[in-house]
Amino acid sequence: QLQLQESGPGLVKPSETLSLTCTVSGGSISSSNSHWGWNRQAPGKGLEWIGSIYYTGSTYYNSSLTSRVAISVDTSKNQFSLSLSSMTAADTAVYFCARYITGSIADSWGQGILVTVSS
Amino acid sequence: QSALTQPPSASGSPGQSVTISCTGTSSDIGAYNYVSWYQQHPGKAPKLMIYEVTKRPSGVPDRFSGSKSGNTASLTVSGLQAEDEADYHCSSFSGSSNPVVFGGGTKLTVL
Image 1 (cartoon, one colour):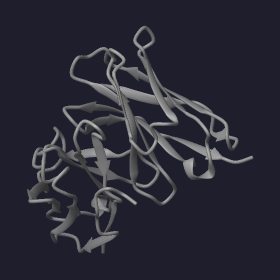
Image 2: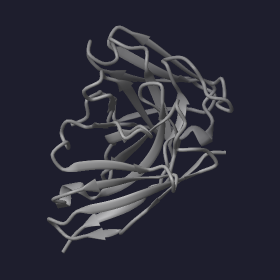
Image 3: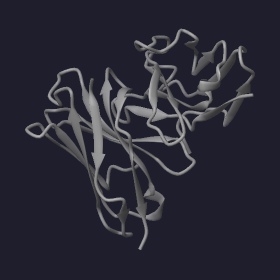
Image 4: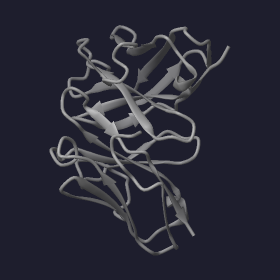
């Protein structure tokens, strides 16, 4: 049973950079049929895709966040990470990591981590 | 503002059927058969319910079904049960430049 778990700070100051890690267990992050992605959900709002990475390091980012986002993968630790710079209150959200298969299908999700941007 | 448009709410009585729509464009829903639907209970992670427009992952009841016509996809929940009360989100593949787009979500209430 594939499991994903997000970790990182729950509080970030404005203008700082958010760093989150997703640890994958019960399967290999190097699986050829999987991409690994980050999504977020602002309070009371819908889901927003942030970006995805393949185990080789190929990345795909939401065009609205490209200038601030970076996703990396560490196959030795079975983890992938999100970096989002210049955080503002508008970035306050629950951040979910997920496995993506074939296009845009997210079949496994982490439980999510609430990140609040406040001084 | 979400790329895909969903009604904010839907409702039905136990045993009834309800359909939730998801409207996109000829660049996403209309172009690809990669529409997915997710169920999300409060405080929980989304759960994949439908993928590739009509397919159900193992373990998802056949009361849940999906369809697509043109730029609009739909999720139908038949034989509504109390546990179906949740938020439902649609998503679609949208090409290589911005692969994943979501709708704003629909809150389904079982009366």
